[in-house]
Length: 169
Image 1 (cartoon, rainbow, N blue to C red):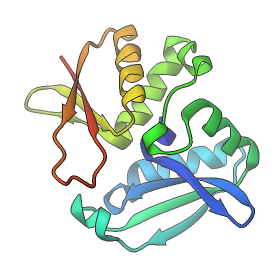
Image 2 (cartoon, helix red, strand yellow):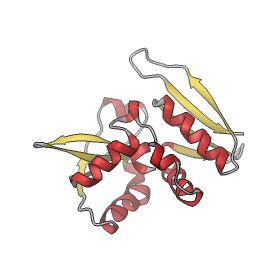
Image 3 (cartoon, helix red, strand yellow):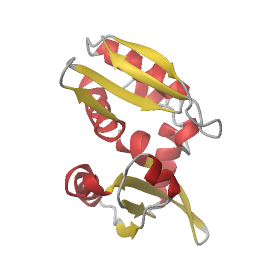
Image 4 (cartoon, rainbow, N blue to C red):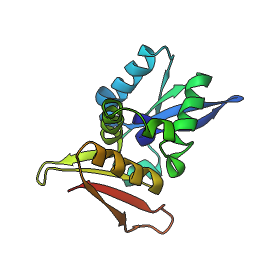
């Protein structure tokens, strides 16, 4: 779930590595949880701090924490089962066939990264530029008994990718 929400690939010397980008406000929450999870499954993530850039300023983030995982098997697994970048993130057939308790964990990780709970309306809201991923998440939510709708969001800047919002009913 974290990879689908916050993950991507980065070239590291001659190898590709998985990186997770979290907002500075997430450092002691999901960023730390993702870091601990990587260690738990035998990965050795490095921790780097990158100062905010123009893109992150637009969404009001402070610092971005990057956890870089160079283990080849993990990188291959993420690409095979989740796509290689934010625009082409998708869930593989293997993961779509997981039992519900694993899909629930996937959903939990995804929404911790790219979603939130609207306390006023009690709706779960997530967003992604990966259209296929949003439709797959909708299917998994329905399997979990949570029904939702998908909305194509208006781009505020023509240079930005189209974003799809998933809102529980």
